[in-house]
Length: 193
Image (cartoon, rainbow, N blue to C red; front, side):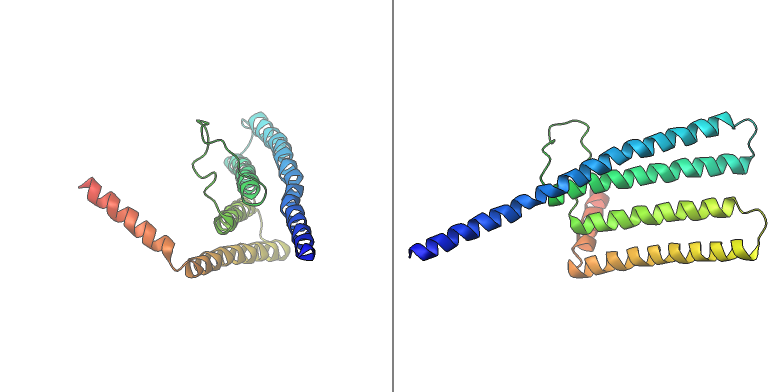
């Protein structure tokens, strides 16, 4: 009997240690938050460069500069999603429910939704990169054509991966997402009449 209680105490202690080990992830998320400052510095540098050359740049150069800013913004948004959702899913809940600026999605993104949001952001970033490459295309050389070909292939792989992940999540969830969406659409249509 005493042997069972000792084993149970050891088990409880080990499980407590394992549960507490999730806090080892916290420095990773704080590191990503610091990386946002690095991204902000790069964004401000690109914005300053764009502003300085605006009067002498061609339309294509301005569009390429703006696409760079969009790309950096999407990357920052992806970091925020990973930081907040990852921290809440794997470390601890953040209780900012009384804060007026709290984004609606905070606390509602589970791991499956986090994967989908990440892949969606990666697809958007990939699309912007691909568009930048097409916009900067001067003369078509075999090397440049090969580079563009691989960029298109990589983008298509990202798109197909995100579609397959969304389908597998929907299948694994029993199609609940489509039922809820249909129900909310029906509610919107009936309340609008």
